[in-house]
Length: 144
View 1 (spheres, rainbow, N blue to C red):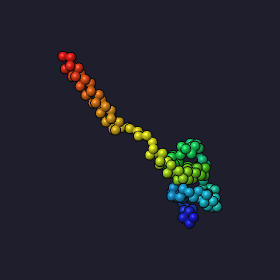
View 2: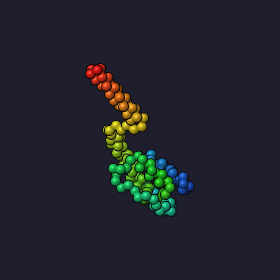
View 3: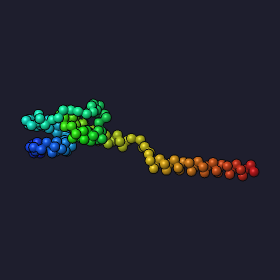
């Protein structure tokens, strides 16, 4: 909590917002403590902006690292209390389910894109052409 008190003692609002977001990233399970400390400070009322922008993703199964990073960017552009609390929720969820998210991505079927798919297709075409040429020569020599 001492680190959070040091962060909240900063008077520059832009720097304070950046450090609060960084604190959430480093302490994702400290949600209740963060909320309690922020609500105690009198500057917190004027510190928040009105919430603008896209609606939040409410389905936790769609919360990913990418969504979390995009939410942090949105929070820097519009530092609303609603967005900050949602960021805390997402950070806590990702921290608790990180091992599940990693295991799901490892069990995902292999997807082939780009150069790998190109090499496979070229190899398939070459094998097909060789088989057709061999069959033509085989039948030509057998029935000639």
